[in-house]
Image (tube, rainbow, N blue to C red):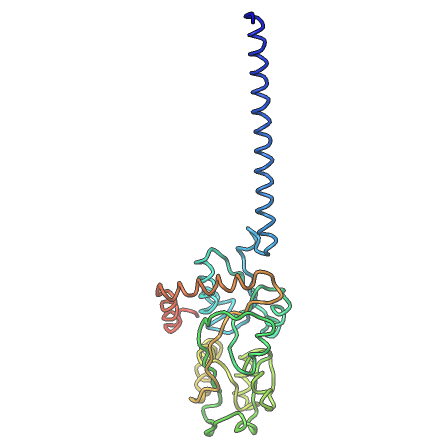
Length: 285
């Protein structure tokens, strides 16, 4: 083969090699794009989007010092939930509502979860039907508040309370227990309203978590009026309270595991005890 022919063949081979390399590059780019699309489709299909999945929407209500829009970190329980999710790379977004609406909207799936709800035999079936329940975030101690000048007599069960005028709050666990036990209650929208009714002699007793009641009297009532109200030393009930994840929302089981994992880390690292000491020292006010 002459030199001119050899040069021509070499030129053809070079052009072919360049075209082949360019073709490979195009194929690689297409495959990469298809892989990215497949990965995105997987995550979106599981209900845990790459961006949206980092925010957990939670309905809750006013229950100082544990949960309140006006308190530092939203209150003790809200703070614990936020940090537990934060340890796992998630952000908790709280929506403060009346308690009954907080529960109902989470039931229907408007929110991923609702905080925080006590475990009792009266509420067990309802919560198990609509929610997945987290590990406890704290233990609630509910007592009966009353006028200091009108202490409760000794009692054992709710059947001993039938002649008391009992104030309650709409949607509360204690309200459901009393109604299911056949007692007549007077429902209002807030704890402060019931404390005022005690002072005015319109009701005799009112069930409320003990620290919530004491915090309320100190924050919203004069020292004179606050001193007129006390509480019965016998607890109405003690029970762990948890975050409830809606069964109507995709990804709830996974979020439940994520939260429990973060909460366990807080306990192991001593962070939970630190926040609880902050609660006892009055920092959530």
